[in-house]
Structures are given as structure tokens and as C-alpha cells.
Image (cartoon, rainbow, N blue to C red; front, side, top):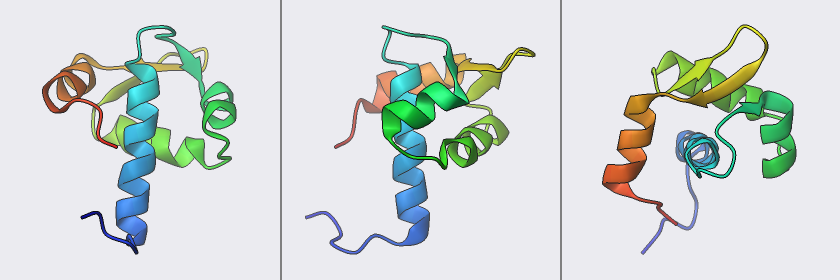
Length: 83
């Protein structure tokens, strides 16, 4: 049974997973942070991107796009999409 009251860290993990899922969806491999924020309806998307970038799960281009690193893609392949 899922935790009814997730901690702030669990909420952050869930939102970072949402970003990774969007980046590995296949329909759109390159996103801007603004596009991610609109798709997630969450103005804090930049925080999630920074966390994933520091973990090595995504890459950033010099012109402001982000995309999943190979290890991020593989993590989603192994674990699948968690609801």
C-alpha cells in the first residue's frame, strides 16, 4: 500500500521520475526546461532537472535542451514506469 503521506524527499523523487519518464517516452527526446514545466504543470521543473543532471541521468546541451543519458534510459527500461 503506498504511503498516504509521502515525505518531501519522496515527493522530489517522484517528480524527478516524472521528468525522466517524459525524457524517455520516445515521442520527444529533446526538451527545454520550460517545456517540461508546462507538461508537468510544475514551475519547479528546473530543480528536478538539476537533480537528474547531478546524478548523471540526463544531459544538457549548450542551447538549453535536456535529454536522457543512456543510464537514465536503461534505468527506466529495467524498472519500468512506476505509478
